[in-house]
Length: 314
Image 1 (cartoon, rainbow, N blue to C red):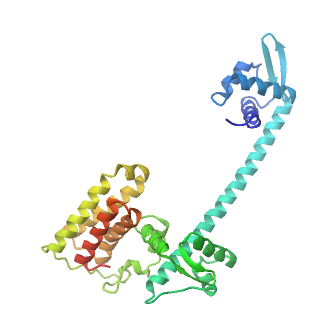
Image 2 (cartoon, rainbow, N blue to C red):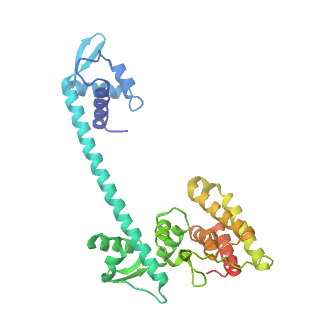
Image 3 (cartoon, rainbow, N blue to C red):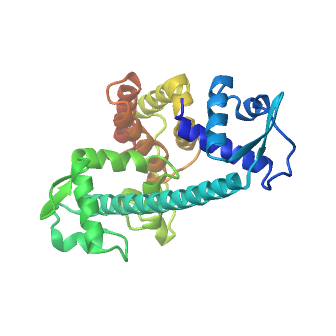
C-alpha cells in the first residue's frame, strides 16, 4: 500500500481536479472523499488524511453535524507545486530514457559492425582502440563508443578488452537470431547495408546488381523430400507451441509466416538462393539458437541441415 504521504498527495490532486478555486465547490464530507479515493484506500485512512489536511490548513471545516469541509486556497498552491514537481520528474525520466535508448543504439551498431567485418574476414579478426570510431554510428563521441564496447564485453557479446577485442560466440548467435526476425533492429541495419555478407554469397550475384538467378531446383530427389519433411515438422511444432504464441506472439507469427512462405517458394516457384536463405535457413537457425535445449531447437537443426544439404547453402 502507498505511504500516507503519497496518498495525501493523491487526495490533494483529486480535490484540485474537482475544484481549482476555493469556495466554488459545495461542501464535501468524509464519505465524499472515500468515494473520491476508492479503490486506493478506505474510510479509516481517509479519516487520517482529513486530519492531516485540516492540520495543514489545506481544507476548512464548515460545519459539525454532519462534519463537512471546503477547499482552502493553500490546497490549490500545494496541488500546483505537486504538478510542477511531477512535470520536472517526468521530463528527467524522458531524458534518461532517451539517453539509455541512444546508448543501446550505439551498442547495437557496434555489435553489428564487428559481426559484419568478422564475417567478411577470411581469418579471425581482432579490433583495437584505433577501430572504435569506425564501429560506432557517425557523430558518436569516442568515450561513448568505448563505453559501449566495454558494456558489450560485460554482456559477453564481445570478448577481450578495449585494447584488443572481437565478437564472442554468444555475440554471433545474438546477431544471427535477430537477423532472422523481420523488422528487428539488426534486420533493418542489414537491409540498409546492402553489402552485408548475410545477404548473398559468392555463388550468387547480389540483388543490387538487378540479376535474377533462381536456385537450380531438383524436386525429385530424396534430399528434397527430406528437406521438405523436416521443415514441415518444424512448422507444425512451432504452430502448435501455444506457450511461444502467447508469450511472444509477433515473433511467433513472423517465424511461422517466413517458414510457410519459404516452403511455398521451394515447392511451387523458382526462388533465388538468398530468398531461400532469408525465408528458411535464417529462421531455422534462429530457432536453433532460441530453443537450443528443446525439441523445437533439435527439429530446426535437422531441418537446417537437410535444407543446406539439398540447396547447397551454408
